[in-house]
Length: 281
Image (cartoon, rainbow, N blue to C red; front, side, top):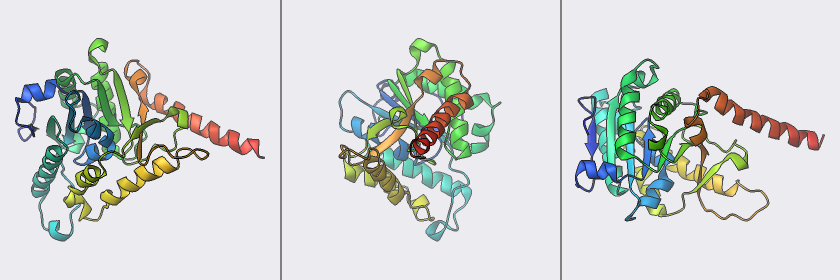
């Protein structure tokens, strides 16, 4: 497929026909930044790894501009960092055996602009071509502005697609804010314990970020371990590592305001806390 930006790229690790690689996609992740995919959708990568009937495709929407840089990267220009981050992402796609990796190369400012139709239209085209069974995306309670903006653009794109052509399931995942605050019955819980060597390798590939002072390699493994251990206080652990998401399929298939939708879950959390306190007061 033809992408909008001149520096955008469809990267096919297996070197099969690009259209075939996209069409065979069963699990699609739409993420803002390089490494967000590996943080929020590792369980899907692992499920597709080596599978003959499940195929993972990743989409990174922004161009990597404005990245942190220190140490060996301190003297790199913004253009240098964009190229390095794209290379890191393509390396992850090779190691994770992704069906395809799309790099859309939008500046963050364009993603955050609600009047910019280019991002929405391109996401619509990608979703229609890939026709995934499951789509993973950013969550509305994330604290990163670009993540929330992209979540809104993704919802907009999905709502403009005929309901029969939409993914059967859409799940919003944790990245810059964990979803452990959701009530247990509202959490979508994903096992991230498969192939621990692959999990460690994928996040460690993004050296430009880790060497610049953000230990994502340690933090994401710690979050997943904590999610598994602290999920149930009176039951033995059934998972060694877990990621949390929120199923937003109903939101996508409705005209409910996204802010109102996430507010209902915040209110449920508030009510649960208040009820527990009241029980022992």
